[in-house]
Length: 352
Image (cartoon, rainbow, N blue to C red; front, side, top):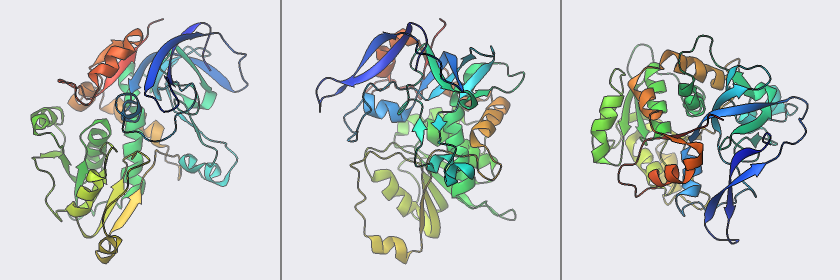
């Protein structure tokens, strides 16, 4: 829930099957719940999973009633006065999966910005444990708004793939050059993979090479990854059609692994013979969100990585386009698929 009289952007449908619209509303404070804290939002990033629902007609699944988007949030904890990043995953803390730290598999998982009100607001109420303090001495808190996509990347590379051999080079293809694809390519390169990042837009190749300068990521020229060229392929593209996964299946070698980070729209189906996938002895795995299993807290590790890379070209590029919170409709217009100069990512800022 949100604080006293705070501005909140709420998504609603005009008709039962009509397009989504965003409406600014003011909400009064609710009584504070035990174990929660209010975070005054300073930066809230728009995720591709939000814009796919708000900027196109490709999403065919349900929408929560009174949905308040925003799960990539940095702000100030009212209780402590400290800068925090909001971990959006709220598990039940009682099931077997939560006990093991596999919170992303909790049957009762709730997500801030989907099941619970999110950060496209001046203030958001979250469980205390989900307000994660930023690293001490961090020079610029805005970069930590990328903690969620970096945590997704860390989880996929660490839990979804075998580590590359220390005595040789393993080639990893990454399909999708949006925020998640860029974060995944950077994380995989740091883990020792020889990374090829591909984009479906040739006009983006030069920009990608510039922002990934200083990393060991290679931007693969159009039309994309060569057939059978990769030991593993990660599908981190947008989920409007099965094309990225079909490309991944073609690009991976026999016996290789395809890891799907793509949050496909519910109606997307895979039109490929199942026999061929198994004949080639492929491993196809899903990698959803992130966890804190085996003493590896993906979200906190993401904060540490961003603290190290705060001044890098790739991180700077992803946090450079910003709009005031009240200008959210303009920010969404800039992110529409047909926008002439579509930014890689957009941040909303609030200084209330």
